Image (cartoon, rainbow, N blue to C red):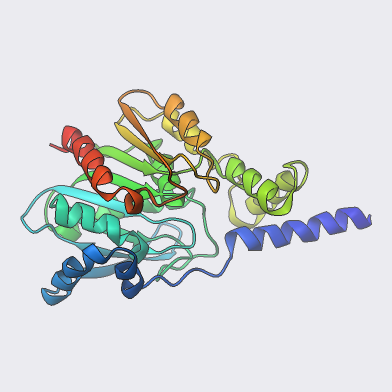
Length: 298
């Protein structure tokens, strides 16, 4: 009896540890320190009051927040940019610079549930977030005041989010996806972390914790699968992953790429750990993303 009580208590600990951690407080000062070249762009947005924000209620009544900015010249081309685990919208503004300044795109940059200024019971690991992404696309034309054609670009958990969204019935105005170091499934990612951080096997702890997540939050770790989603996606997708990523092991990128039907591209970034491909290789990142989206967004 004691062992079952211990396992149950540890499962509650793991749920809180994974899904209700203290979010990181990324601000504009931090992102400029990390990417000094975006400073003048952000200053320009502020000077011209071009950076705006808005809130919506999703279908479950959760209050969600996003920043958005219009392109310098009117265009339907719109990038919806999705941040990673414990990040926020501001932590994606180096990619916002890429699309808004370099490529002249409208940008919409949401805070996922339980991050930034968005509400929510816990981190959703991309699974429920995928539906929130669809809701942001639904109101995009109100925000940018014209028709919108979308590229969805995410990093880490944000990449998993856009991949999970790629398996849904999407509006015709979604043209392509860029996923940067996303995981194959929540199960696979948590199994890797359980082994690395706690030296625990998947069975039985992850099985029990997954069922607890389903009971508390309405989804389980195996159904939250980027791999299953990309198998259903016929739209173009660019896969980016660092070859020294241990947080989301690089082998996941190969599994995702192999599962995805054409059209698709894969870039394994040399000498690069998790989520810093743009920081390590800004010029090549810009060139590769630019060539890819230009092929499908026109």
